[in-house]
Image (cartoon, rainbow, N blue to C red):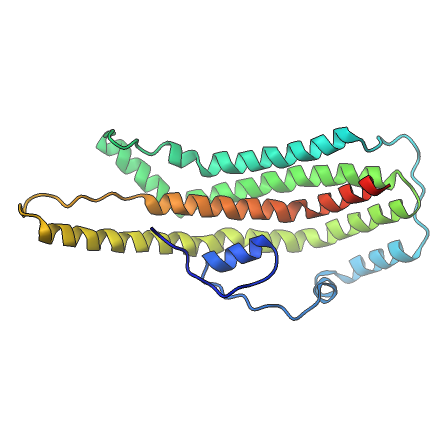
Length: 258
């Protein structure tokens, strides 16, 4: 069975620990605090806006905004479930097209399928498409909850303003960091493919040596590496979804506490 390279233990979000385990990138533990990181990511205009939001009286929101209820709780759960289902169905799509053991699809069809699956560009495009879907869905949900927080007025409005500033300021950095994940996964993809190719070659040579009939082909069953990669890609996407939903969880916690 193909195994991912083993790494030393690393604390932090599941997404970081997964990427460290699956890729060749050796990530050292950061000695910087969260506030230090944020100070590097915020531009001067963002810093000014954030300071104003924290140190001036928050604006008063006109009444009429929809109030938080169990319907919003259900909507948040629906968005999470829908995105998780989209990730699961997409990463399992090519697996469903694989031939069933005992069935022999036409050689041309099998060759075309193998060639398409072995092209990482297809996986990269699917990952980017799912990222776009997550960003849009989670962003809309976050904006909706932020409006409900702002409608409480007072310090609640201040919290909503701060969230809006941080959302706008950190979005470019978030896109850049998360956008690098497909490239990181490419090395894992290639390593799994090469490992299986080497294992099949070794098994084929051994079977050929042991076969009584030298003309008999060595039995080779390939494709396990693609199943492994799809599962790993799904795990990374689900971990990324959890990271993207953290601000939403924070707003939900605030609404529940009031």
